[in-house]
Structures are given as structure tokens and as C-alpha cells.
Length: 330
Image 1 (cartoon, helix red, strand yellow):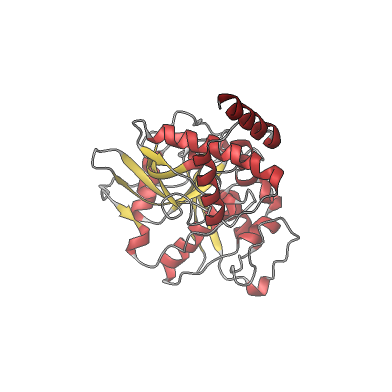
Image 2: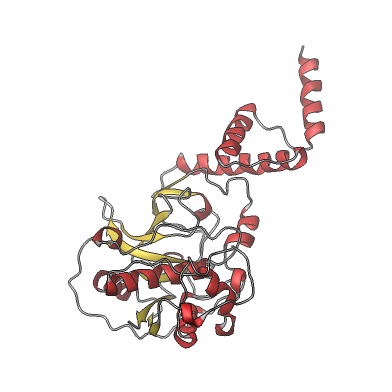
């Protein structure tokens, strides 16, 4: 009997050319495929099953430990971090050290909790950048959408695709990356940004199709928060509006599900940022751990309905090196 089992196992490994995957893991994988509407041919199926099993092992091991955040399966769970980084993060190096401070802080005091999502109709729904490193465009539009809504009372979804296609003269690189502050500079000198409806998102680079007569919003100036001044970020978010920031998204961030993200796997310097997002508020855990409330651009299936919390006050993953917001022209 033992000999029969040996031959069956050997045949399984030979046919699939992959380490033996427990039936339980394949069951979870099939459930995940159904949930995310994914279909693979037989060769790629077993490659993706292997990656999925490794990611699930990482997630289970992390969640069994004592951490400030939990991990979970999501739409990226059949991807290696190398693949994920290529498709979803900034691959063109960004020089956040060029950020010069122009935000002028007050002395406070500040509220213990701020959340622009509940202050009014000031934050658009979470969007999805798809297979394109255009997070910088979503961070920029998200911030400008909120600034305009706070100023005028009108919340308008703005065009990421226009920034992707048209802002390259301002040291942006479409799906390869850019910076929100440089996106705001483009809008300022271009004299306007169209709506998402008039210039819809494609998830890939295309030729610029800006129509000046359809410009919906305008930027008067760009405010950069002094690098590493996280207290100034608190000042801006509490008194004025959400702010953009860029940080180093490490491999454990790919699996984030809930809790306050804090990691030793990321870098915290200006030359290491690879993802741009939007801080819509802040708060603190019951144990006193302060955090930022952050809007991401990977759809609502990721994280906390598309959002995440990240530790505040320690320049976690470089989040304080490159923060900005626009001043609207209304």
C-alpha cells in the first residue's frame, strides 16, 4: 500500500511539475479563482497555485504572530511581489527630496480624530488603477477632488487618464510613475483638468487628448509639506483638507487586510518611495498607537474596503518625505 501511495505522489509531482500542494490549498485556490473570476490554462494554473500557496502560508504565519495589522487573501494573492511591483508600483525612481516646504503650520491644538469621509461629501469612492503604475494620478485627483469639494461644496470625479497621458513634461512617466506634486504643477500650468466622465480611465498610456474647453477644475498653486515634518501633515489634514503622500510599499503591504500597518521591511528615505496615496484623516488605537487613515487605489476588494491605516508619527515607510496638496483656482 505504501508503495502505491509513493507512485501516485510521484506521478502527481511529475505531471504538474510543481511541489506537492496539499488538497486543502488547492481547494482554497479554486474558491479564490471563483471569487475573483480568474481562469488559467493548465500550465499556468499550477504555477499560480504554487504562488498562491506560498502567499497563503506567509499570510497564515503572520496572522499567527503578534502584529499590529492582519493580512488576508486579496486580488493579488496569485502574484509574486516582483510581479506585483512591476504592475502596481512606481518603477521609475522619484526624487521626493526635491519637495520644498511651503505649508505654514499653526500651533494647534488639533482634534484627536479627523476623518474627511464623515465631515461631509468630500471624498470620492475608492478607484482602481488596474495593471498600471499610475497611483500618483489617483493620489493627485483624490486630493484635488476633496479640495474642490471642501471649497465649493461640489464633489466631482476627475481624470487620472489626462494626467497619465499629458503630464510627462513635468517629470511624470504615465504607468511607470510620477509624483502628485508634479501632477498639480502640470494642472496649474496646463490650465485645467477634465472630469473622469469626459476623459475616462483606460489603465494604460495613450496620447494626450486634453480639451481646454472641457477643463473642469483649476489649480492656483501647489503646497509642499516640508520633508519629514509629519506634524505639519497633521496640521494640514486637521485644518484644511486631505493630503497626498508617497511611501515605500514593501512585500508585506501587498497582503494588508486590517489594523495599523507598521513594518520593518520598508525603507523610509526620499529615494525609496514607490506608491502614492491619500491621507483622508487620522486617529489612534485604544492602546494609544496613532495612525493615518489612507485611501488607496487598488479597488474596494483590497484592505479595509480600499483603505488602510498606517502608523503615524514615525515616518513609517517614508510617508512624511513627500506630501503635498493643491490650492484651487475657483
